[in-house]
Length: 119
Image 1 (cartoon, rainbow, N blue to C red):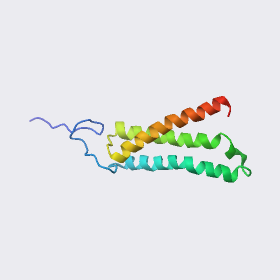
Image 2 (cartoon, rainbow, N blue to C red):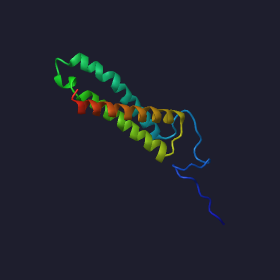
Image 3 (cartoon, one colour):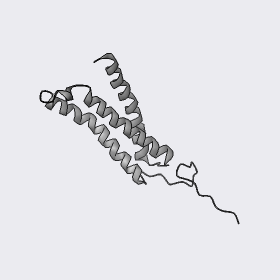
């Protein structure tokens, strides 16, 4: 009697989970939510800065871009873990992976470059 080996969550076997548009795991849904929050922070934080720059001077400094960049980087790492190590292959997960990794790299270089230049 031979035992049948089932593929693990990170397996590239064709017997792995079928692809669909929506994520299949709870971690996939968490990464989608974190990605939405992270990308929305780049829309919300500038509005907060314009509204409260006189009242709270800290928002008119490096803090808001740094927080938004950290959120995007966390979303990118979660997407990498979900897709590469947990085997999530839904269209939405792959799309958010591409968006967050590219945005994370760009925004990190942008914010760090501005910090080094003293802008």
